[in-house]
Length: 332
Image (cartoon, rainbow, N blue to C red; front, side, top):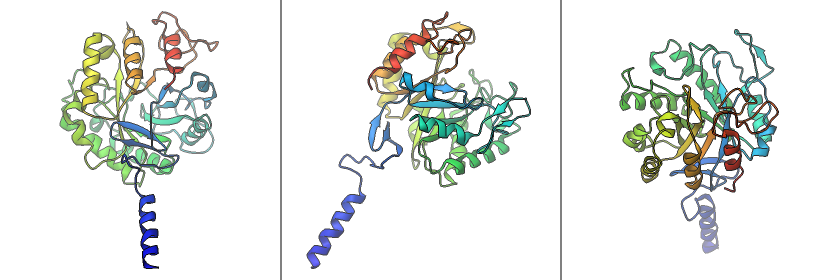
């Protein structure tokens, strides 16, 4: 009987452990393990698009492009409701609740990344290019972030990004890697203090385009943290670079074994037309997840993926719509 009890105990211990490769096997759960995004314990590559569902919930149309991620623009963090019916905000915009956006995305098998793009829905208070702790709403923002974390802490397909495109592109705001580390640590702690263990998306410096901070301090930042995914934005600092340099930059990030996600890629930024084709093909081949800017029906917007009729938008944008559609539909 004694030996039988010992066997039962050993069997239970084996069931509670990770598999032979050390990969957590949490059914239905998204996790980060090393440099990989896992779903149900298996590495996955996810392809998605940035979306504007806070203004109009509905992601069923993304399914035909085989998209896995909706990175959601939240431009009025202060007023956007967590739950309930849509509201009319102080700018005259109807805003749908974050939970309703998540529920609709989930129904279409989409991971939701909730990304704070702006504080109050005005151009003046968009987060891009801001030094977070120098904003007037820094403390209020952290309180909102805590509410987000509490609301979604038991929903592993909801990832929260800490800030959209922090710090100036030219570092004229006094940026240092130490300031990035301090601020991202503070925001990470806000989410984890609620018991939320979901994936946290951490942006790069220089309005999201500078990966040097990851090479300099990215590994140290991960110490004693879990489920962190780094977000790089690929505009002119990437798309105007040579193919050789792009390969070298991606290789350097891979050699550092960092968990990567290219959260924005598009053919036009600051009026400059670029070709994202080489980088997107490289990311796809390297099994790195990425998302396009922008899931929008408007051929007058060169970065919109769709025309008003729902066709791939190839209007003066290096055939952006067709390019992304073809890559998104590839096996992965």
